[in-house]
Length: 238
Image (tube, rainbow, N blue to C red; front, side, top):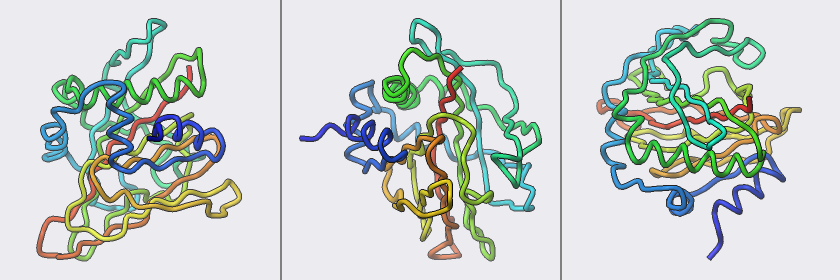
């Protein structure tokens, strides 16, 4: 049996990105903890506040945000709630503004699944860049496909995040089509594409080497709720 974390590390180092299917992700996470409370964790995406900082006027994104750092001991510590900020070099649409989002609830941060995801990322990204301490940001995203309005997972287009490494973890897809993750070289040429279709499907990105984006999602049945839930985790070396 292949080791998904070893394969992911090799793919990140050589090509700047990796895709793990749901079984591969579960095997990777199992090396760092438990996801026994996954159903409750996934349910925490319900009821999130709208993102009020969409410069395109869109009403299709809900999100929560948390900030953490690692200590020399290897422990991961939550920081006080703070705004998310990106320069316009990295986010042409919404950059240049301190954006205050709803804080990720303590109950979510303390869940087995959330802690296991953080630990697995630290283990993987720390192996690729050993001896570092890290600034970590987490984003719970729900992208909704509303009647007459497609949902835009990356309204800024193909982009970098201004960090070192990125995890995009699929939580749930409901009544949507498309949402294809695309990976591009800095010159714009396409290096790969895949769809996070099942819970636990994951994309891993070396933000120095590649750009990434996701195509718009549309409702299959416009009369029913339609959305794409993901957890995005970014690591930036201090």
